[in-house]
Length: 230
Image (cartoon, rainbow, N blue to C red):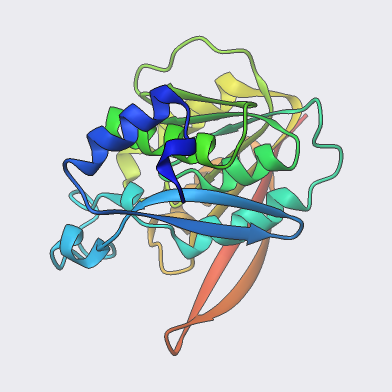
């Protein structure tokens, strides 16, 4: 991508990030849409051997485009009547699901907890030519006031049990009555069944599985749909 085509603000952000990391743009094609995602070029060097399934407290989940995020992008792109609906992605990381949803017509708010993450998101949104995306800081322990959303979504956010209650509070705060939550996680995520057991007290939960093949391995992604009980 020709960086000179970015708006001034996002080009300045890109250059600031580039002073710290080797960068690349990936194109993610989902159905009739295509978005561009700014990524760290050498993830293995960045991760320095950290394993996301054994050291979750230290692993920078945002830096990788997870298989679950790609599957969730397809799920959101398949939803009807996107135009006029508001969508919130929490723990968005690189923002693939939310940016895909924006390309399909949703008015999207991407959220995470570090400025560097939102810097990546802002550049990706601009590189994808979208104007219907807002990037915002969201601390689950101190959530700000926001108008509720028709859809709340997230990929790979269930990794520590102490965040179950704050996450459920986020859902209560930001989901419109009659709205829907879509979550996507690697089936190996140990906290997933524990969270769903807690959430079923408040939500009707449906789940599907999708298995994808990558580098000679099968990876099973679980997609959960949650709707508040009456």
